[in-house]
Length: 98
Image (cartoon, rainbow, N blue to C red; front, side, top):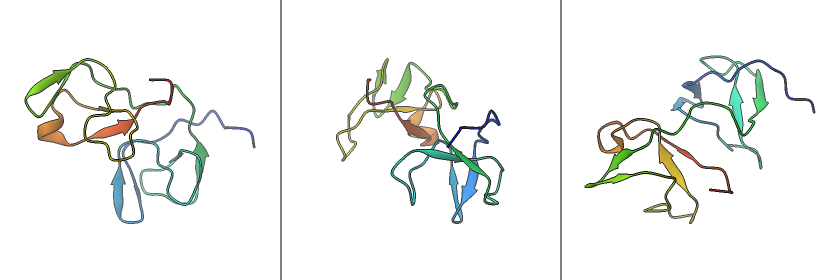
């Protein structure tokens, strides 16, 4: 399947949940909606798809300067999408290389 050039829309609503990053719900690969409220139009995510990590970000009582595995039960790295994760709770999974 060729990935269209249409940009992902963030945040988007899928299954009555607002998503701020690419998701793997019902898929083995990350994907995103092409509409604010999922209408069946989607594409697989690319490495450079927004949203971008926000560094440094505040997590608990310390600043984080790169993707971290702190408190992620699946032992994968993640980052905040805002400067203050404690306040906003918005995050995304980092690429496997980070």
